[in-house]
Image 1 (cartoon, protein in one colour):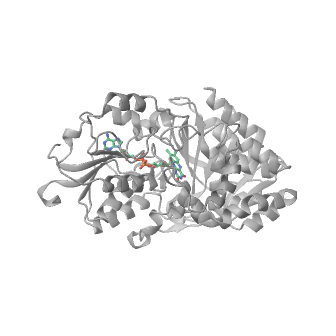
Image 2 (cartoon, rainbow, N blue to C red):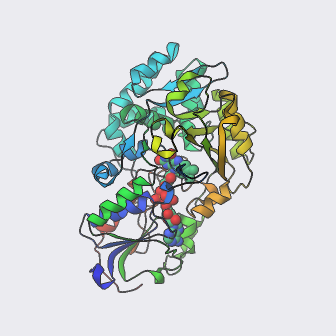
Image 3 (cartoon, rainbow, N blue to C red):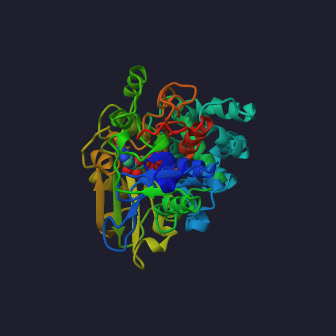
Length: 482
Ligand SMILES: Cc1cc2nc3c(=O)[nH]c(=O)nc-3n(C[C@H](O)[C@H](O)[C@H](O)COP(=O)(O)OP(=O)(O)OC[C@H]3O[C@@H](n4cnc5c(N)ncnc54)[C@H](O)[C@@H]3O)c2cc1C
């Protein structure tokens, strides 16, 4: 098809990392592609803006990008040529405790193990074989379910990954720092840590810290979609903002439509001609807890008691394994924990361009029940103050978003769920519905490419890549509709 005639081989609705990855995968195969974005800015969960004060550039959603650097698809794109520079904090992650110590996830697995003292040998035994085979593992995990080329590598990982994070941490580690460190990394699953497969998220993210680091984008995460859009343009792909789609009849003439949307939104789009049994399956799709997000403009770096936190790109606040697990469990019961588990990032430690000279920013969120409107700012700030007394006096300005406001910012965050749906055992590989090719729908012209498909949330673009592959595997015939 000829984009110059206003018709396209494929139209992608939504410009998150998955929508843009899908568009690039299609454009690389000589398909004419248009990306339509409802908001005035491209990038979905990767937008940056001056949320607090002039000159302070905050990331509205994603900030820490191990999945971007480790992504089998995004790593094939020359993003640096299009302005993306990923910066590595000296330490990927620190997890402070009340006694002034902090557990530290270092770039080096050996140094991490040494820092965990009595639990060091157990850490090496657990992580060593996984880190050694990280690439084939990530290739298989960041995609739809399929039989692995290296079953042994996956079997070893799978036996540990299937466990609840609490069980894996207590089986392997005896001391509070190692247990707390593993609990914090696993809490990125947004699952109760007593639930199966919550350990998988801890294992994957810790592995990536050793394999590729936990980088941030210089100048803000917006540079990721900016680079993706630049590369897409070099392949002839087009983008259009301010185009919120309610009906497929609003799309220009096209062959395939790829929707960077979650099931609830797909159901609202008119003209999809999806049969009722499939619609009912989509309607049963489950969303998980939301997030409450806070960004600060700061006078100085955060005055952490544990010195090592001052060099860590990410800091997990929540104390011991027991405390982190109980905060996350409370969220699943519909409660707002008084001491939430907080994920905090400090971009200006490595990127001075994000704030005026000698000033700093910090980014943080905690999990809350889906659809929450509760203001968690004081609870989050109390957790920072607990491990960094004097923090409150360094705050120049703050910006907050509750779970409902997250959805208003980006309709894909249904009720504030940033993973595009629960990622538990039942819905990890079978998102959005159990189907041999989960990206396809019963309508051969419509595909779903958002994080509501495998492998789920995060900035890796793999949902988009596999959805494009699914679309390419069917003949691209124009029916002239739309
Ligand atoms: C607070 C927060 C922190 C996060 N932190 C991290 C992190 O540190 N690292 C990480 O890897 N991930 C992180 N994530 C998750 C990550 O941002 C998402 O998993 C990722 O953006 C999902 O990509 P996507 O392409 O599926 O959807 P999205 O990025 O959500 O993009 C969907 C796009 O579709 C558009 N859209 C929706 N409906 C329509 C419509 N009807 N018509 C047209 N356009 C439409 C939206 O405006 C949006 O631009 C975070 C998310 C949040 C909210």
